Image (cartoon, rainbow, N blue to C red; front, top):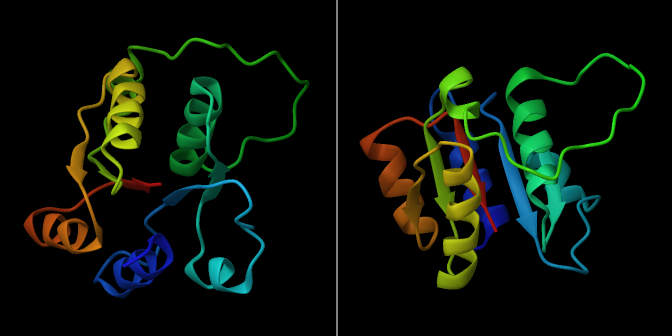
Length: 138
Protein backbone atom coordinates (compact mmCIF):
# COMPACT_ATOMS: atom_id res chain seq x y z
CA UNK A 1 0.00 0.00 0.00
CA UNK A 2 1.55 3.31 -1.03
CA UNK A 3 0.94 6.67 0.62
CA UNK A 4 -1.83 7.63 -1.75
CA UNK A 5 -3.72 4.38 -1.14
CA UNK A 6 -3.25 4.81 2.62
CA UNK A 7 -4.62 8.35 2.45
CA UNK A 8 -7.68 7.09 0.58
CA UNK A 9 -8.29 4.45 3.25
CA UNK A 10 -7.85 7.01 6.04
CA UNK A 11 -10.38 9.33 4.37
CA UNK A 12 -12.95 6.50 4.49
CA UNK A 13 -12.72 6.28 8.30
CA UNK A 14 -15.43 7.96 10.37
CA UNK A 15 -14.45 11.48 11.33
CA UNK A 16 -11.34 11.51 9.13
CA UNK A 17 -12.76 13.56 6.27
CA UNK A 18 -11.29 16.81 7.64
CA UNK A 19 -8.19 15.39 9.33
CA UNK A 20 -5.10 17.15 7.98
CA UNK A 21 -2.88 14.76 6.04
CA UNK A 22 0.68 15.76 5.19
CA UNK A 23 2.50 13.87 2.45
CA UNK A 24 6.29 13.75 2.32
CA UNK A 25 7.14 12.60 -1.18
CA UNK A 26 10.20 11.72 -3.23
CA UNK A 27 11.71 13.93 -5.86
CA UNK A 28 9.92 13.65 -9.16
CA UNK A 29 6.49 12.84 -7.70
CA UNK A 30 4.09 15.64 -8.53
CA UNK A 31 1.63 16.75 -5.87
CA UNK A 32 -0.49 18.22 -8.69
CA UNK A 33 -1.48 14.75 -9.91
CA UNK A 34 -5.32 14.38 -9.91
CA UNK A 35 -5.14 11.43 -7.49
CA UNK A 36 -3.46 13.65 -4.91
CA UNK A 37 -6.23 16.24 -5.21
CA UNK A 38 -8.90 13.62 -4.50
CA UNK A 39 -7.36 12.81 -1.13
CA UNK A 40 -7.15 16.50 -0.15
CA UNK A 41 -3.74 16.66 1.49
CA UNK A 42 -3.24 19.63 3.78
CA UNK A 43 0.24 19.88 2.31
CA UNK A 44 2.76 17.98 0.25
CA UNK A 45 6.50 18.33 0.89
CA UNK A 46 9.31 17.00 -1.27
CA UNK A 47 12.09 15.09 0.50
CA UNK A 48 14.57 15.93 1.80
CA UNK A 49 12.72 18.40 3.99
CA UNK A 50 14.14 21.13 6.16
CA UNK A 51 13.11 21.43 9.83
CA UNK A 52 11.70 24.94 9.35
CA UNK A 53 9.70 23.71 6.36
CA UNK A 54 8.17 20.87 8.40
CA UNK A 55 7.41 23.22 11.27
CA UNK A 56 5.60 25.74 9.04
CA UNK A 57 3.69 22.98 7.30
CA UNK A 58 2.50 21.42 10.57
CA UNK A 59 1.41 24.75 12.02
CA UNK A 60 -0.43 25.62 8.79
CA UNK A 61 -2.06 22.16 8.58
CA UNK A 62 -3.47 22.44 12.09
CA UNK A 63 -4.32 26.13 12.34
CA UNK A 64 -5.21 26.85 8.72
CA UNK A 65 -3.55 29.35 6.41
CA UNK A 66 -2.23 32.57 7.92
CA UNK A 67 -3.59 35.86 6.67
CA UNK A 68 -1.22 37.58 4.26
CA UNK A 69 1.42 39.54 6.13
CA UNK A 70 4.90 40.78 5.55
CA UNK A 71 7.45 38.03 5.12
CA UNK A 72 9.74 37.29 8.01
CA UNK A 73 12.70 34.97 7.63
CA UNK A 74 11.87 31.45 8.74
CA UNK A 75 13.74 30.21 11.74
CA UNK A 76 16.03 27.30 11.02
CA UNK A 77 15.51 25.88 14.49
CA UNK A 78 12.52 23.88 15.57
CA UNK A 79 10.52 25.12 18.53
CA UNK A 80 10.98 22.55 21.33
CA UNK A 81 7.91 23.94 23.13
CA UNK A 82 5.52 23.59 20.17
CA UNK A 83 3.95 20.39 21.50
CA UNK A 84 3.19 22.15 24.78
CA UNK A 85 1.35 24.95 22.98
CA UNK A 86 -0.19 22.78 20.28
CA UNK A 87 -0.61 19.24 21.61
CA UNK A 88 -1.17 16.70 18.86
CA UNK A 89 -1.37 12.94 18.59
CA UNK A 90 0.90 12.19 15.64
CA UNK A 91 1.18 9.03 13.57
CA UNK A 92 4.33 8.79 11.46
CA UNK A 93 4.29 6.23 8.63
CA UNK A 94 7.34 5.21 6.62
CA UNK A 95 8.59 1.92 5.23
CA UNK A 96 12.22 3.06 5.33
CA UNK A 97 13.81 2.83 8.80
CA UNK A 98 16.24 5.70 8.13
CA UNK A 99 13.48 8.05 6.93
CA UNK A 100 11.38 7.03 9.90
CA UNK A 101 14.20 7.85 12.36
CA UNK A 102 14.92 11.22 10.74
CA UNK A 103 11.26 12.27 10.68
CA UNK A 104 10.67 11.01 14.23
CA UNK A 105 13.69 13.00 15.42
CA UNK A 106 12.30 16.18 13.82
CA UNK A 107 8.98 15.66 15.57
CA UNK A 108 10.78 14.95 18.87
CA UNK A 109 12.72 18.21 18.54
CA UNK A 110 9.33 19.95 18.61
CA UNK A 111 8.28 18.00 21.71
CA UNK A 112 6.10 15.40 19.98
CA UNK A 113 6.31 11.65 20.50
CA UNK A 114 4.89 10.20 17.29
CA UNK A 115 3.58 6.68 17.05
CA UNK A 116 5.32 4.82 14.23
CA UNK A 117 3.97 2.60 11.47
CA UNK A 118 6.19 0.83 8.94
CA UNK A 119 3.47 0.38 6.30
CA UNK A 120 -0.15 1.09 5.46
CA UNK A 121 -1.46 -1.99 7.26
CA UNK A 122 0.27 -0.92 10.49
CA UNK A 123 -1.03 2.63 10.03
CA UNK A 124 -4.61 1.42 9.69
CA UNK A 125 -4.17 -0.82 12.75
CA UNK A 126 -2.87 2.18 14.72
CA UNK A 127 -5.93 4.17 13.63
CA UNK A 128 -8.14 1.35 14.91
CA UNK A 129 -6.46 1.63 18.33
CA UNK A 130 -6.75 5.40 18.69
CA UNK A 131 -7.43 8.62 16.82
CA UNK A 132 -4.74 11.01 15.62
CA UNK A 133 -4.69 14.74 15.03
CA UNK A 134 -2.01 14.49 12.34
CA UNK A 135 -0.78 11.67 10.10
CA UNK A 136 2.48 12.07 8.25
CA UNK A 137 4.10 9.61 5.89
CA UNK A 138 6.89 9.62 3.44
